[in-house]
Length: 86
Image (tube, rainbow, N blue to C red; front, side, top):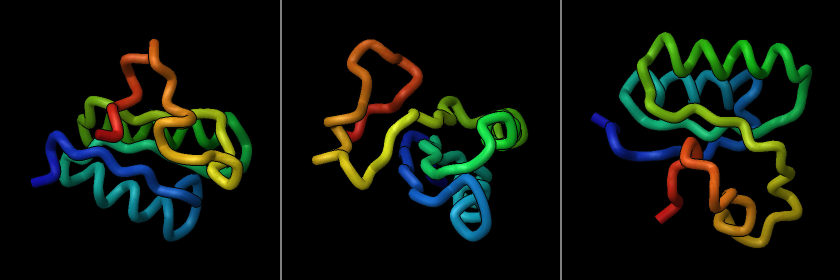
């Protein structure tokens, strides 16, 4: 239902944010996780979402959105695994 769409979910490394990320991934949406916590645990969750739900992209860019001016200000230009925000 959401194939080809991409969701940036803040606070998605735990609790309700992670539950939302899992629900959207289950519907085929690519996911950009964002949050704080143990790097190994976040990577485990990222891999789970990518593998369990077959999403093409599930990334966790090392950024703080509190300082970003727009989604394009943090999107790496050379990183093909981060979906375009347009």
